[in-house]
Length: 331
Ligand SMILES: Cc1ncc(COP(=O)(O)O)c(C=O)c1O
Image 1: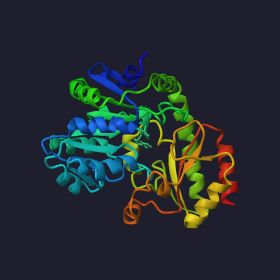
Image 2: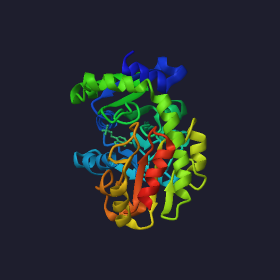
Image 3: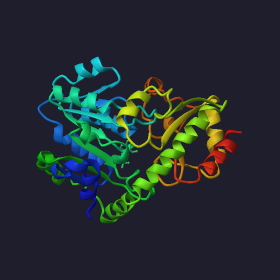
């Protein structure tokens, strides 16, 4: 089966016949195609403020630089979002945001976007179609970085858009001109990865939930961001929007700040430091110096990204092995 068809069936379920998909050379390329297909006539494109650093840079810097108006807003502030959507052509949110793991209220966002006549695009990379199918909750376009969970082994770069059939002509037209064609090898590896997605997500999400609870009880840790914890600001939304677990990503903040974070990662033995995520192996990143390094200090602070924060992508190893590595590095 082709990758595009497989993703349509996974994202669409019973509505798969009404959907099409377009694979791209990277997740960022997929976002570019979606954005360019909506841009025009001076209508602004609205993006959530807590998106992946590259997407944030596209909407806050690069699109405005070529004359495409954008508005970057805190989607938790509904009135602000409603006002920002006035006259807008598109709303882009992530199902689970990076790195504070806030879960977007997809049905509510879909209502707001559609009331304003905007196309609602959801980056479902962190959740995967196994935890959330945004098209069934009102989204018009779902995007994935195939680089992450879909391929699952940190050896692919790719992206994909899944959307209603009537949007096919415009999206393919943009793709024909912009030409972000994926390589056959990456597409084949992504399709192979898809075959084990359900198994990987089940184990990795279970590991993340257990590690989040364990980290929350550690004195060295001042804060744990995981949507499965009742203390997480979007736990209630996550319980409604996610189905089948709370995901395999979590973030935690060390009381000792940057020095403690540096010392911690230098002492890890099993877990590797890596800016990407979603591999079968557990990895850790330091958002303030990697994925979110383009943000100024005030932006980092508003988004709750402090120098002591680490983002962990739980893998499928034995959870006891991951915990012992964390424990010895904390000590
Ligand atoms: C949520 C999210 N969306 C999109 C991207 C971009 O994907 P790619 O690296 O495949 O271009 C990333 C990359 O980390 C991401 O985390």
